[in-house]
Length: 437
Image 1 (cartoon, helix red, strand yellow):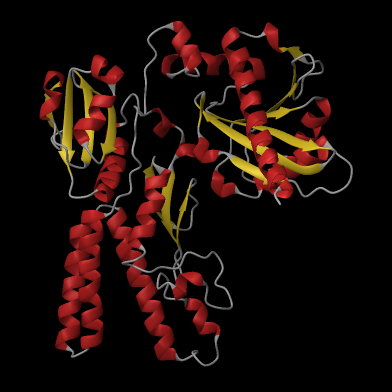
Image 2 (tube, rainbow, N blue to C red):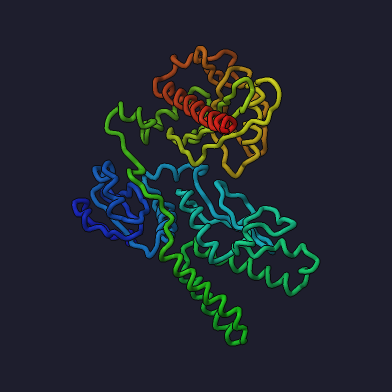
């Protein structure tokens, strides 16, 4: 813990207003680690954690980007008690780089075997903004398949465009080698920055600049000089954190508050055990996805997917679908389309449990859609609105929702209602668009 500078929680006003990483500690136990553009103001927002902690700590950074990277490294190192989302590997964000002549840089929720990865990161929005900002300094390839012609990224100066090599005019060994070297150097430099190795990148760039000057390649040397200046400017001034007006984490103070806040922390594990017993499984349940469809006589049909992590809605993983099924209204076919399209995106990660709005027909079509490589032991339930009957795979008869423990009852209704709300809001948006003059 030598990286942190600890102070008694009574002296919060002495915390710096710089960007950096902060920490709450009770005795020798790390409770929570977070990042902030303004450490003092962010820490003061964590009223419940202040109540639980005996000390707070901080590490100042030169930029918000460095704070994001440092937070990832420290949470991974200390595994704080209340950084709950870091315990579910489907809720991580990673930066990957492929191993090929013209490497692709991308972000994802799941690690695969072939590419190199850095992570995990918990703030997906800040990570995407970081990649966007760093792309100005280190243009990189982001397309999965190299296209036949240059795209907008090339014209904006954010990609070295290996696609140009498909042109016969540019299919020259020297040009190919130059583009290959630039893409590899940029991708590797960006990757090192994301790992927190800024000093190494700057040192290597300065060495390369001197080397180019010595060989009288002044054009290349000037380009590297500008790259160094741009990197230093970006790291010092880039704003990647959204303004937060309230705490990211709020600990419940009483039983009613716990229910309103979607069954947090210790209560969630109780819910999880009840769900395991209901489903007759031993596997961990952390990520739950709920699906619903909305339409009026088949017109402007929409589908929704909402995601709860450890009992809490996580809008980073919400998805909406504009239904393509033609003909008469068919809720079963629409659910099938939503699930089929969703399963075509393994990079989103997979849930442990799926809840479908509907009855036995919807459950059966979901089960027939799911056998997809990589999905694993995924359980499915369907909730019929009329009597609130819960249909579960491998059970002959439905279960009345009201017969379940109150916490499970509340969670399932919240999942169903949130999926319905999200589907309706998208449906209304499409109808309003059609009705606009």
